[in-house]
Length: 202
Image (cartoon, rainbow, N blue to C red; front, side, top):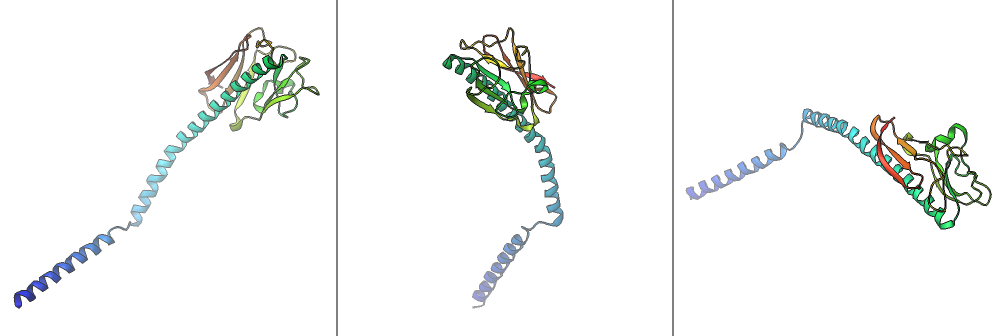
């Protein structure tokens, strides 16, 4: 009886010891104020390191997309000229309905349009359909042209043969706010073929 009682007491003692151990482990799961502050500080540092990288990814993606849009629009204009048997013109436009003139004629970042230029005068006249309108570039990116010395100035035209109405290569330069090899140059040859390459900005 005593041994049995003693065994019971020992069994109960072990049970109590195990329960206390479990309770103490559960209580240790909490975090002190110091630990919380340390975790917040580490998180803030990691976020600070990640932000520039994320910004670079967005900028790279944006400039690639804008260069791709221009390449696609040049291809569309050339194909439409051959399809319609008429000149198709690209011009800078901040209205989406008419070509910019003067100093705005070299700033394509405000937008540009493509239209069927039936009379080949580089002006959107009544009855000349507008085929596409590209809105102003996002991110305050710039898109400028050089080499367009035709009349009217800074209007690129494609003939039904697919050739461009320029005597030599013309270029579009696309840049964002960064300095260095982050920009794109889109070159159009007299044959109408367009190519893209990395370039330094500004």
